[in-house]
Each structure stands twice: as structure tokens, then as C-alpha cells.
Amino acid sequence: MIEFDPGPSDSLTKSSSRRPSPLRVKVLGIGGAGCSILSRLSFLSSDRIEFFALNSDRRSLEVCEVEKKVQLGESIVGGWGAGGNPQLGRQIALGEKNRIKEILKGASLLFLVSGLGKGTGTGVSPVVAQLAREMSILTVGFAILPFSFEGEKRAAQAREGLRDLEKAVDALMVISNDDLLNDLEESSSLKEGFKTIDGILEKLIQTTDNLLFHSGLISVDFADLKSLLERKGHLSIAIGTGKGEEAAQEAARDALSFPLIEKNSLKGAQAMLIHIMGGEKLSLSGVREAVLNVEKASSPKTEVIFGAGVDERLSDEAILTLLVIGKEESSKGREGKRSRPQQEELDLKAYEEDDLDIPTFLRKRKN
Image 1 (tube, rainbow, N blue to C red):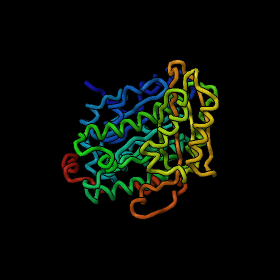
Image 2: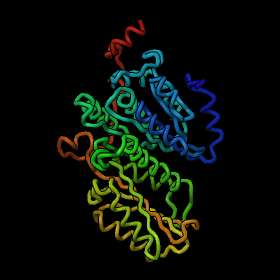
Image 3: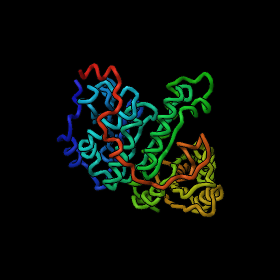
Image 4: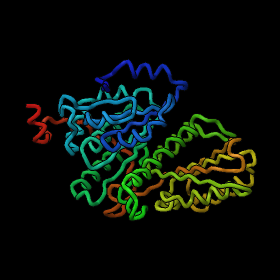
């Protein structure tokens, strides 16, 4: 039988004592979509990168394969979820602020993974992001927007949730489910579509692990990553691979053709991090050409952070990782162009109301 975390517990304290480094990364899956994604990527969890599943729906948590699970809002919804109501999700999060802060405690970098448009993910994520900001934790949002065929109500709720999330996080990566339809063949399964989203987050987490916990010839440290992410823009990632005499150059070309980079032009990038990993045959001239090729695709005003390392296992291969902070719009981008707003305070007190609309079936259960 699964035991859910009833509040601040010894399990969090014990995990703190095991950490091998003062630098800690935490990944929170919030709501049904966030928990499902983390469940499929649970193999990435480690002493360095901790996974937590947060949901108000007990049944969803029961099937989630993340080790550390926290059920939210038991006294409000009795384990039945937020009923697609983001306001109820906010109320749940505000009632659980102390427990959420306990989870966040000690984190250096935080990833918030959630699907927007329904109740828990949309309502809880901005509150968690704001609490993390108050605790001076570098925070990256990973938000998934609903399919357009799910209806205007859900789309409107997603847009509002995204606006709230943008106010509190340092950087935000936005993935639209509609893009799955555009990028996949007609015969592709739903499972294959969601694997695309899983793959993007997996690359982001693995890249973070490689950059922060593995030294290189030209290392990228937490201060570099912090400098990039605190630009408060929209985050994109690309991974390119190459092999042979021009492995690094080939890896650069491959990265520049990565779907997320193609859709969000590098010309509008504020800053980017370029990291090249290769075997012992990796040449200085090859690295130079690879970096120049990426820089040519961006604006002269784009700030560049560079790192490189050697891994003997790669032999004549090279891997180029590209993290880009741009000004691409998200929450209003499909309705009209706008510039990316600066990070601002999300007023949590605005949501501390007792008369939020609780779905009828939940009111009956409480009575």
C-alpha cells in the first residue's frame, strides 16, 4: 500500500542528509499531466536530482511511479482532485503553503512540470513558483498547453494560468499539445506523441545534470546557468550529434535543425549556452567552427556562454547542447505579438478567499 506524505516528514530530512553536494535540483510534477510525465521519467531521479509528485487526485498518485508523493487538499476535496477548477487548485495550494515550502527547502534549482487548462496543474503551479521565488530558488517552468479541440474554456484557463506562471518563474519552456499533431504522422499513436514531450524534459534534466555535476575542460557552473535563466525569458533546448572528422560542426548543424530551435528563431535570443562534449579526437578548430556556426544563426547582441568537455567513450563523436533564452511569447502569442514581461510579484493574497466555486459533487461529499 502506498503511503502518502501527510505533511513535513522525516523522509524529506533523510533525503537532505544523503545529498552528496550542497547544490540540489528538485523536479516537481504538479497535477495529473505533471505527475504522469515524471512517472515515465522516474529513472532520472537521483541523489542529485530529486523528483516529487504533487496532486490533489489520490488515484492519480497511486499509479505514479515517483517515489516521493504528496497529496494536496485532502481536507478540501477529499482526494478527488480539483474538478478542472483552477481557482480551487489555488485555494488548495494556499492551504498547503507550509508543506510546499518544506518540499522546496534546500533546492538550488527547481523545475515545475505541469499541464495547464485543468484544476491542479493550472492553479497550484503559479503558487508554488511564487513560494520558490520568495525562497530565492532559481525556478524553471515546463508547461504543456492543451489541445485546441479540448475547448475554449480549457484554453482560456490555460492562458490565464500561463500568465500567472510567467510572473513568478525565472525561465519558462512552453510545449503545445497541438504541436504534437503538426510534428507527427497521421498514423502516430497518442503514446508516441507524449513521448516527444517526455523526451524534451528528459534532455533538459540530463543537460542540467551534465553541466552542474560533471566537470569539463571548460566548465559551466551553477552561476553560469543562473545568469542564463535569470534573463526571465522563454527557454528552448536543442541537442545535436556528429561523428567523424567534422563531428563538432555536424553536431552544430544538427542542433540548429532541432524542432524547438527552428520554431523559435535564434535571431531573437537574449542569451544562449553552448556546450560541446566530444572524444579525445575532438579538435580545437572543430569546436571553434561549431560555435561560430551557432553564433551566425543568432543575433550579434546575443550573449554566449560556452563550455566544453572530453568523454573518452565518445571516441570520434561529438554532442552539442544548446540552451536558448528568447523573447518568444506564449500566453498571448497566439492572439497577438507582445514582448516578454519582466518577472513580477504574483499576489497570492488575491486568491485567499473562502467563497471560491467548489464543484457540486465535492460540496456534496464534504457535507
